[in-house]
Amino acid sequence: MEELDVLRAENDHLRRLAQQDSLTGLLNRGAMEARVAALLQENTPGVLLMIDVDNFKTINDKYGHLMGDKALRELACLLGYYFGRGNMIGRMGGDEFAVFLTGCHTKQQIREQAARLNARIAQAGKALGIETGFHVTIGAEFARAADTFAHLYERADSAMRAEKQGRTMAVQFYDASAKRQAPNRTTHLPRQAPSIDIKYISRQLGEKTPAAGACCYEFDAFLAVYRFLERGLKRSGQSIQLILVSLMNPYGDFIGLEEREHLMEQLRENICTTLRTSDIYTQYSACQFLVMTPGAAQENTELIVARIQDAFYTVTSNRTDIRLFFCFYPLQPAQQKKEISAPGQSQSQRSAAGL
Image (cartoon, rainbow, N blue to C red; front, top):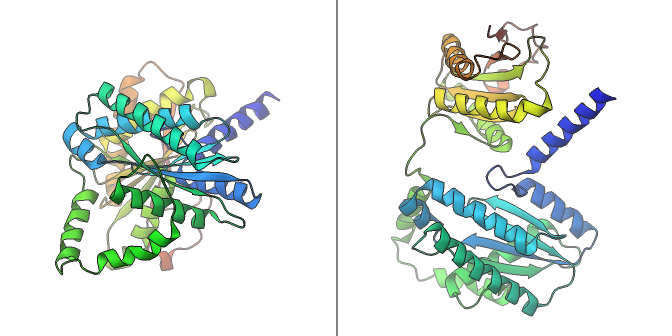
């Protein structure tokens, strides 16, 4: 029974990780979409709020990305405080959040809630020392019969973007007529506008102050990068190694729940600081990380392993009961891939225990 309880606890932990935004602790985009879609299928009445931080790029540029992350976490806490009971709250990506308020609400009730929220956010910005101000723009739309999440999201997002332009109130409700008129506003743009737009977008997408070490992605993002690189492998000819790093005891079992979180956080830090800025990694399971090293030849894997081991074992030198195990697999062009044998049966995979 004890082993079954441990397995259940581990599965619950993994399920929460898969649904949780790593920065804020809120639902991630996928989990938010799935849960709201389920409510819509049951014809649950509600209102979707789309929330976007104003001038978030300015906060990052002036105060740094650490302050930007702190501001997003503070906003997540405030959303939980104001809307947490019985409602769905998620981070949709970047500085964009969503709240699904279940039940029947009037527009006036939502306006009052939004006004109180923005006032509290402004106070939080002052406490954080953000002199440029900390505010959000909110768009809202009521769920309709036979609504899908995509349709509801599109309308609420349209309302939010209309409020970004108008700046008339604490919250903007969806207006179908305003959406129909929207294309007319773009007909008189100067010819150079697209060129200017793409330069602005490029500046938005680029990292202002790239952090040292490897990049940590959520699993879905890691998977997207993996498949993107895999598709272009035949054309690029690039050598890319996939490495599975497992934290175990000397007998090949996962570390116990009571100290797993601490040791995995230490291993995450060691992976981040010892790899290159072009490498990426993700947490694959409760005791495993996946690492991808574009541009690294297969003979470089020993060096990569040594770096991670040295860093990890330096801070855990008194622990003779834990080991790191490594498995390697070189990426191959998608159309040339063959069925992969079980671990230990393929020449392209091997395990190495750090002793």
